[in-house]
Amino acid sequence: MPKVAVIMGSKNDWEYMKEAVEILKQFNVDYEVRVVSAHRTPEFMMQYAKEASERGIEVIIAGAGGAAHLPGMVASNTHLPVIGVPIPSKNLNGLDSLLSIVQMPYGVPVATVAIGGAKNAALLAIRILGIKYKDLAEKIKKFAESMRDDVLNTRLEA
Ligand code: RP5
Image (cartoon, rainbow, N blue to C red; front, top):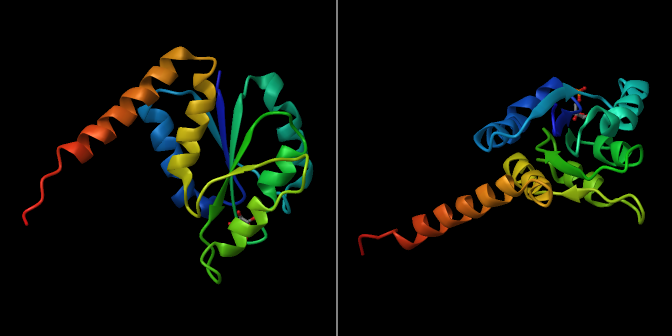
């Protein structure tokens, strides 16, 4: 049963959102991937968000670009944690996406990562799951240790 839903507003977002899936695979986390458009498939978006929890989804990662209302609208139709990924857009390089996603009003939070930050979205989802699944918490600790060792072992020609 998938634990993480990776959704995006358009198939054009996949080139960025696939990085989240690569991280989930690396940590052996079950996931599903879908295109769910807030403005082209509004009824489906609501149904998807409302049913996600009963289908076993525990965290939703939602990527969108431009007038990026998918993460917020999904958050308003589920009690699950929603992580928003601002997709780099053509005209404003994703600043529009970032501001659309990060400026959620009080009561309907979306945890927003950096523009194009799909990898961190997946890592945050795994940290959330790590509260319940101790093996994932251990994997996250090992991941941090390996990054630490990489830095400590770095030698520069000076
Ligand atoms: C957003 O608008 C999508 O997330 C995508 O980044 C952007 C363009 O969407 P499409 O025109 O490809 O549907 O909803």
